[in-house]
Length: 357
Length: 233
Image (cartoon, rainbow over all chains, first blue to last red; front, top):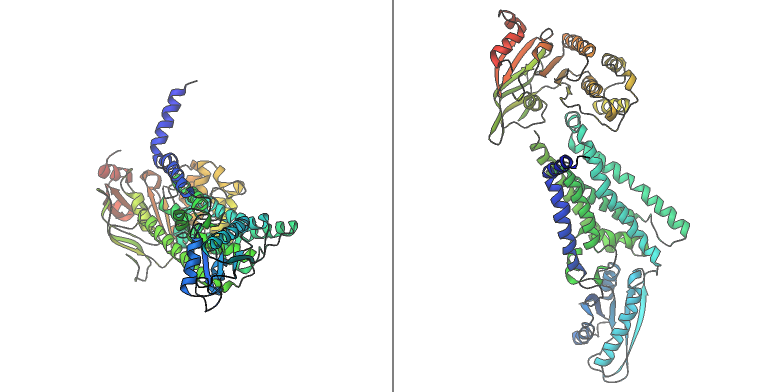
């Protein structure tokens, strides 16, 4: 058995594929090690909580007192109207809303009735919301000289954990397809690319692929619909808002994945970069758990990622009874980033053509 | 850079072409016109710039300087390295590209398949074919839409003698039918009997561009002319 020549061959191969190896052995470990920073806090200590007055009689002082009481375990966000606060609760911008009665700062006896609104569809938050109710009660009782009562009101239908996971798992399938199969498929096209360029165009090829694969996403949607029907889950898998959010998210991811493949000239490194993006999306995108559970750094990062909103839109459309118009800005934003990704993809195609030899 | 030819006779041409790759000049001051009714042979040693010129004519490479004039006519292309879908069968490749080219499934396609001897491998996956059959598939895709301009890069490589002769005969007939055939090769002797025009490229520059009539005035064989200009190797 002659090992040495084969080991030398591995060395030569490694030199030829040094970029792929650097990505795998340096960039990936660095990203994974760096990702640990995002997990500094997994117990919510500064999650956003809305604070809003019951009516116009509630003064700024009343709200400030309540904000001061809840600051200990949350990051209070003041609202002028209850409907705006509840809309933000539904959009996962805040994870609870404290409704403040008037005269908190001026009364010295009697009873003050607060209401804490939480979103029932946010299953991982259900137990936490009970703890928060107790915390709010304890903090306000110690801060105020009167009897304080907190009633917890659940808005939106309550779901089971399996139901909560359905939109996430479906989103995961779509993301996996976009960041693994799409680049693999495009790389397989490389052997025919010159003929495609002479008989048609790279743009036509890319549009055909995006159209076909987006249509193909109907298959996992139907599979999930059948599965949820079989298990009797209360999840609207085929809600128009969910389909729109999923397909826009898929288009965005597929366009980014393709752009990376053109940029790396269909190399193995391109596929690795796409897989890293997939991992990064799940690590930092705040897809699985409500992002308010994590550190402020990680929350800020998640809120910079368009797919974070795609996931919330999908989850909301499947699990909540909310009108889609409260998400109209997000849908417009998602559509906007799809257009931007398309422009980016076109630029990578132009660069690819220019670098052709 | 791209423009169409305003002349009545469609012409595929490059003018004052220069292509640089960093410090390397692959093509320098190259002008060439490919016209219907001719088998035009572009010959040169390895590394002379033939493939760069060929790919520039197809619009696959952007020249550093110069102009490309593309005809308002169909162009078919056979690549040096066969270009097809390896995961599809031969028939599926022909179907996919025929649709892309709007080429009808008619007697022409049957003839092309016969000339190239592809009948018995129609249902085989293209990626599993031998080098020769891959080349044949690539050539079939090149002529599938009956292009007015047929550009072939090293079309005889990997082909057996019988297919080579059949193909040469086919190319000659094809040009006689009013079509343009441009062949890029490093083996002039293969095309000596069928060529109507010879262009010799060496070191990125055209060193000879003559019609057969002009060449036959010279008391030398094609190979002799080539060797004299370029050298034996």
